[in-house]
Image 1: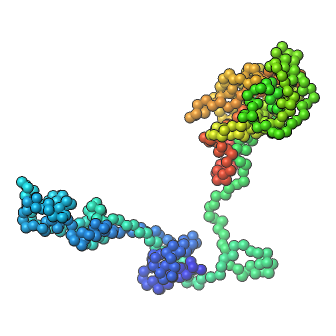
Image 2: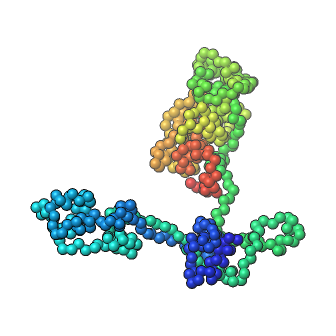
Length: 477
Ligand code: PHE
């Protein structure tokens, strides 16, 4: 309603010939504020009925010092008027305004100074600065001098000019419909037919509007890409829970019971125990003496209680042995992308929860070359062209290697661990063939692919980020 009133006020004869009033003027006649008027005018503008123009006007105001000189004259003017034709410098310096004034007398060339005598040079005509001082308006050329001397300052004021478009004028002429527009109809209004009398809000199908499609979380998309690649490479997905007994998380991997990774500060232990599986004694014997193999084991004690204690899995390697136990016949190619937990201090590259990509390949004659081949192929499919390996160490593999990929700007980045399972790991389960195994940092891979500098950003719940990420990433990285 206010906008319509504004429209009428702007077109009606009340304004006389002045057809483009500013918001301040309209605010006065409408008994409103300037801000409110601009708001109404913007509403009109959105519908093509009016045009709002912002105009900034520069005016000048004398500073306190300038104001003083306007009343009493510039210091140099007062000095020059204080003597007839000449005066000894010593005398002139007694004038209260001599400190500022003498410099300006010189600068303006009003005097000659010689042998301590100050002599007038012709008549000191009124300068443009003096006229500007009397009347500080933008058209005065001397205003710049005043600004430089800090006798005046600029003030910028903004005004809004509102003009009505031809469409707006037509609307006013044809009479305005003051009924409120309805945005949503109630079932009541539809049933009774009342809707026919309502003024419905027009809906533009032309205004471009960004539409945010529903999509998977960007990290989930990358995980799905990795899964897809592994499916294409002939792998089967294996799954398991995040709570494991220490037996499956550590012991079957020939990780000694006093291994530092099994300490409280590295692992989340749960107040839960799980029964050991049938045949667990083989694992016990392997730890103590090497069982039936040529291994000597770790020696010392092996405690059932310790193996039964549950943990939040510290790696997905805990799944691999369980999978091999259930699938003893070659070939086996299996993978899992799953969350793992470690007691880490949180920083840009460490979070206590993250995802690992686990993989195993068991077959008659597989060897280290195949392992490097699989890893290289996977990383290349993920868009990392250069892959290299360096020696590593894990208690359950021999040899052990760590894949690294080249990332422009970062250099070689380590992205996981891998190796061939030791006899100590495979023998208790009667696994007869070599097993290639790896655990890759899936979250690190995702972070690199998305160009994130901080691992934590993968897990942030930031709707805008998700919205602005692509609906789908191309697998052809
Ligand atoms: N489990 C190791 C880790 O979490 C990775 C790994 C998996 C190493 C399989 C060798 C074989 O770092």
